[in-house]
Amino acid sequence: MKKILLLILLFIVNHAAKANPYEHLYTNLPFDMPRLSIPRFPDNKVDITEFGGVGDGIHLNTGAFKQAIDALAAKGGGVLIVPSGIWFTGPIELKSNINLHLKDRAIILFSPDKDLYPLVETSFEGLDTRRCQSPISGKNLTNIAITGSGAIDGNGHFWRPLKKQKVTESFWRKTVASGGVLKRDDYWMPSAQYLHGDTISDMNVPRHFTTEEEWKSVRDFLRPVMVSFQQCENIYLQGVIFQNSPAWNIHPLMCENVIIDGIQVRNPSYAQNGDGLDLESCKNVIVTNSSFDVGDDGICIKSGKDEDGRKRGIPCENIIVDNCTVFKGHGGFVVGSEMSGGVRNIAVSNCQFLGTDVGLRFKSKRGRGGVVEKIFISNISMIDIATEPIHFNLYYGGKSVVEDLEDGTKIISQQNLPPVNETTPTFKDIIIKNVYCSNANKAMYFYGLPEHNIKNLRIEDFVVHSNQGAEILESENIILKNISIYPKKGAAIQFGNVRNVVVDGLQTRTEPDTVITVSGSKTDNVLIKAKYDYNQIKLSKGLTKGKVKLVKQ
Image (cartoon, rainbow, N blue to C red):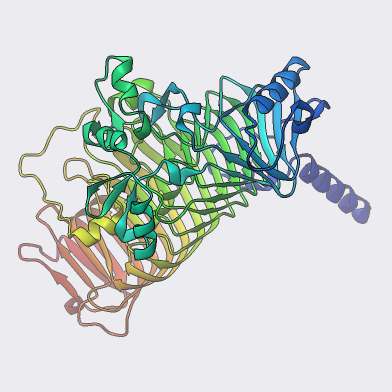
């Protein structure tokens, strides 16, 4: 009887796994989230060649893609097959119930002719604005997919600016010789129109334009994200390579029920604003079995910027990221800096970051507002991290962490602190467990706002080998449990203006003179449970042992 019951149980489990290959991702998930399933499409199939498509890398297939998609949509949807070849085209607009399926060795290559990409209403970097139409786009759609084993190339180098320090001397000379203009000796831009747009914009978004002529005067500057889905439901991206985007690579905006499985996202390391995946104000998302090798943030969670984001008021929530790899780029897994609509219920597990600037990166600044909460991260491995494996910066200014480090940027605390209101960002209720990092510059970096600290963070089972120890500033309700920090020099942890901190188990270099330093006039209630002596805990002037307690283990 027991054997029969076991066989029945195994049958049920195997059947459930086949019915939903993502069921295992919900095991012990620390928040409620609907089960997502792969969208199904009608049996209708058409081949791009049936509509005059030619895959020779020269023929422009914009019309063929449109006719094929329209024909499928008229039948109620189905699969658009792109066979092997190079399919040169202008922008592709998907429709509901369409699966764009790339066969092996099929490459969709987007034309660099900017006249093919009209200006459209959209959002970029969290602000409502206009940009050139994305190479692949869809709005207010249901059931859409890009699947297969081919590649999609956005020809992004025709759109992007270039910084000299990011490339070799020969590459730089070749780029400058191709045309364009220099903003400064080490910063090339594709055209004078691009330079004009850069000059008058708020970072990458022009503000206060009122006429069509003004927008057209900076058209070259308004480079699009490569894949833009807005307010769509039931999205499936599987198997395909997405590379060389003009700006961000994949940007689902205000979408629900998104599955991303087994894709590769690639941009050159020098790609300006070359993010891999930006999930913005999305709900119910699975990202799994995928790799990101890009020039900016790898996997990024956003929800709008400043007043535009707060007015939209749509958080990014219910996100599962599992079994992904990020190479290079500014951050492996990133939240912000555009997070004004809030971020919550995020689970990140079983990922590896290889050579990113930062591993787990959380960034914002005064003026953003928004609440980031209920983030659960576990089982992360990292190597060769240029700055920190875990990084919180509430003074983000638009530069990468490495650029800030190279510039020697200093954050100066204000004496007259601003009031806490809707424009003040909140980061709280974050659990990070089982993180291993070999070769980082600094073990950890937390810098909250003095008027509104980072709070309720738990870091557990964390091992890092770094040049410097951890630096934790303007933070409260912090638990560090089973922490191993091995800096080449200095203390393992520096605390500054922290409250309600518990260090429960710390391993570091063999018997250093100073294990932990504690400073700050606002510091209070720091409990250290470790094997070290009080003379290895350095307190700044004015701090007493009543505020910093040691329990020797």
